[in-house]
Length: 131
Image (cartoon, rainbow, N blue to C red; front, side):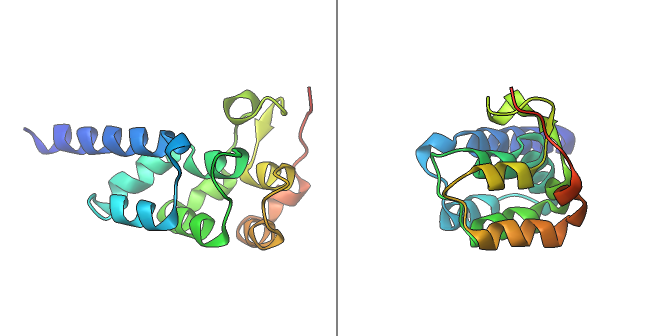
């Protein structure tokens, strides 16, 4: 298998894992799984799968600061990545930042919200639309 094909296969495996949030995503499980792959592949897969958005916008996994920090360490631009509102939550229209999802998630601790603002202060001034 060519190096390019191997990298693509690894990226697809990671995206499937990241997308399977219903199985319960933990910091330990994420660390264990991602250490099998090159850092650049993990970063690309985390961004492609909108992993940070999924963590913050779902009620199926607990939103912990250590998990959010780990994802942001893997893919720093995730804090400034916008996705269509319907991609992660039907509570939004238009573009949604991770901070919007964190603020909307009643179980998300203030420490996560503060961390996201610290990493991307402009997000605090970004408006959103509700359906």
